[in-house]
Picture (cartoon, helix red, strand yellow):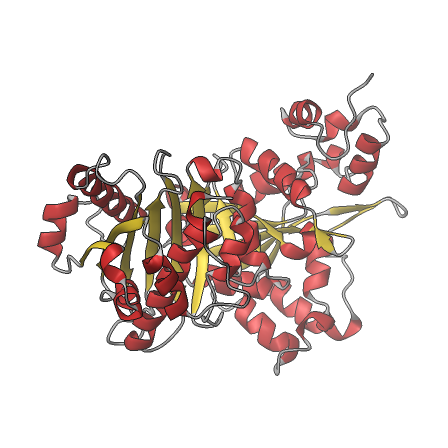
Amino acid sequence: MSYVLKGEKPFETTPSIRDKAFRINLNENIYGTFAEIGAGQETVRNFFRAGAASGTIAKAMSAYDKDFSDAIYGVEQDGRYVTETRLIRMLRHEMKLMEERISREKHPNKLFFTYANTVATIDFNKKNKGHGWVGIRFQVEPDEDYNEIIIHFRFHENDAKLQQETLGVLGVNLIYGAYYKHNEPKKLLRYLYDHIDFDQIEIDLVNFSGPRFADVDNRLMSLQLVRNGMTEAVMFGPDGNNVLPASVLYKKNILALRGSFRPVTKVNMDIYEKSYKMFTHENRVDPENTKVIFEITLSNLRAEGEIDERDFLDRAELLCSLGQTVMISNYQEYYRVVEYFSRFTKNRIGLAMGVNNLVDIFDEKYYRHLSGGILEAFGKLFFKDLKVYLYPMLNPSLEEIIDSDNLRVHPRMKELYKFFKTNGRVVDIKDYNPEILNIFSRRLLQMIYNDESGWEEMLPEGVAEIIKNECLFGFKVPK
């Protein structure tokens, strides 16, 4: 049992925001500062209103003026204020002041915390709905090092006052969760939405650090965000760390490859290399401003109805080892992926895929929920010069290569498919490697599991060694 829970009775039902703030205030050991920029002092307001705040709040401040903020926290290199680096500066600066001004000898049992947020609410024209960073740096034991929880969120409400109120609720949930749910980080994430609807805010990044979270894998926490419906997509970079989608995709040309990547094969990498070459030769596509995304849909992470988290990490680690950026999404349909990318860029978007994937795109069953059916979906998918780069498939039974010229779609879709192909929206990858067309991931997995020989040659360089060293995908070390 953690230090802060001693002598306290847990709530049997979901506590109100006032109850959460009041419980924090009544704990004589929890003591800290609030620094809020951009949306009022909405979080600390809840603690003041709850009562008994004098023993909890050391200081509450809001450096609204940019020059004043720079004088306190320093100047950001990019000149922006609603950034992760700004939030971290705020947390570290305020904690340093706490340690300098409060004597540990006089207060040996105090559990210091600093809560901070830097936020942009909806603009006057209501074009940009706003977003923000919120975080807490805190102790669970007085002689323990600090823990941190960093969150990025996007507003979905269309009124600045409502956004401010939602921010205040989120802040209380975060502080309460940090102290009373730190030992259950998955539950802590879910409780961030206590008294908040999913259509009010979207949390698309979370990072845990510190001694209490030493065993927390932030990639799995990202997966929880998608599973819980807190966001539709998360990303992590080649180093395996969580990254903010907006920072990765903003004003970029985007080439996306969807797959199960279980595991990533030579075929996957050939699709990537050949489609990238074609994409970067398109008009207005600068290779220096182009981002490649390997996307895995949540449905591809399910095994027997449940998501296999270990399997998810295995796929991610292999893709990251090849220097790729990975996106986990809740999008089954391709048009929704394109809509998501379009939130961040107006530049060119390309999709690289195999024949089977393209055939699925022309399957009407995926669009029955749309009032305009498949035509509405295709209007969203191809609305701005999007191209599909099609990798051929070997049909083993007929011993023929299937490409855009001879693939078969449903008879009702023939004319629609012909229209997009004739207009250059579907183009074949011509310089593929014919020697690897017989590589199929399912067969490869069977070979690994059954300890058959030859599967190593089906994988990109270095991948087989990782699978063997870490016993991934059912690989068994020979006795």
